[in-house]
Length: 140
Length: 140
Length: 140
Length: 140
Image 1 (tube, rainbow over the protein chains, first blue to last red):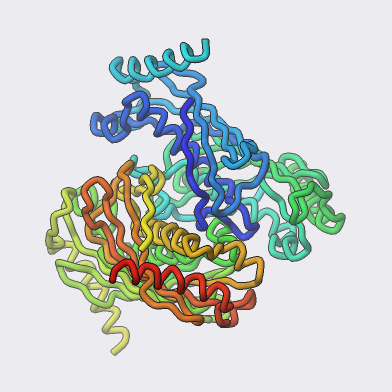
Image 2 (image 1 turned 45 degrees about the vertical axis):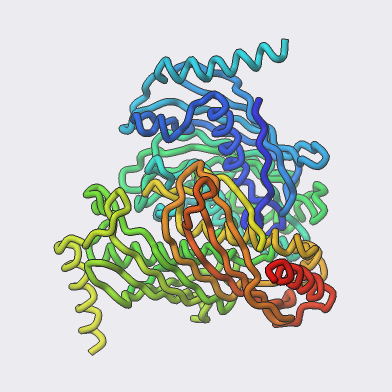
């Protein structure tokens, strides 16, 4: 599990006075990017090789509102992984008191630039798998 | 079912060259707003009475990418409705050829300004219900 | 001058209850895209030829707030044009009563994919110029 | 001068592969908020008292593109200040090598909830002024 912290931006609020629900998907993305970086999988490097990884499914349950200027913490956990897909689950917490704000999940697949499904090259698979196993080991 | 059309904005794309997945939630919202307007339920009027309607759950499956400058059509269907919650399902289509780009669903609840769950006032319930029944009648 | 209309989205508002100022730049862009389309200059076609047209300067003066669900009208006028740059001025109006909400201007240059300044190919220059002269003719 | 650092989000890019120009205004805002916080002027506190501070003018010159995953540093400097208005200038730099990416400026005024111009209460004026003078002192 990788956690990132960020401060809620003014522009992320809407006229209800709280963070607009679409922004949580952008926060999930920030955590997902950091998870992959921790595995030494850099998105620009993949893209340069013609590998993209579109989101094919997302879900989010909203528990409490996030407010302007609060520090939020986004936790990303790799929940399922193969050379065909990458699934993460997420939790968004108010960092000050660990109140759960939202929970969600995403599924990515790997495709070439034409949108055709491909298998993730072994090199990158191994890197992500190594991080995953290190995490599992940390739990044991 | 209510359908709205819009043209994909340049800013809605990302460096993969297609629409960023978070924007579909914003398109769902546009269709949801129009559905409520068709029922003569105007969000500013509700807010002025201290009634808000936060999203508590969203999900989306992405089928094909949307691209800059394409006309998309977003269809919103009321799938479940009571004085406690409002559930919509959505389809996003490329308007030119009716290709399905994404499908999703949202659930809203009604709360007061303090975030406490309330029941939707009868007046608004009746208006939404009238539209729903007119739609069902149209199907029969 | 080309005008586009759009309805203010819920997500475009912020906790002050009005449209966030950054969104006007996105509205300018919508009008700029339509102006170029009217001249038969399509951005994806230029990009496919390795021509991009980054914004190098923007300014905006905000006169009145735009609100959720209002219809806004964005007018784009080509104010300066050469094979080296493209300058537009904009007005954003509340469509219902023509109240001026904002005025602004942008400058684009033409570059290749490496960010090096280039001159717009004659073909596209002529198309934009033809539209411009037709507009000037309409005024005379 | 107050500086904030942030990492460019994937969603902030567009199909040209670089950060969309509208996002720089959102970065300016992050730095402006932190400047005011450093002066102990918290926006939610002002809003709770019926004081809002809309942007009335913004400008930005773009020098170099920002890219996904780069660390950017946004510097905000109070350039003009009275009980009637608040002007900031900004610089956005790529943090790794201090390359200037953009420069800009904003002007805010103070209004009540009805949009009528007001004067900033003395308490807040003094706080901002104290920070400003401390900064000037630091330069001398």
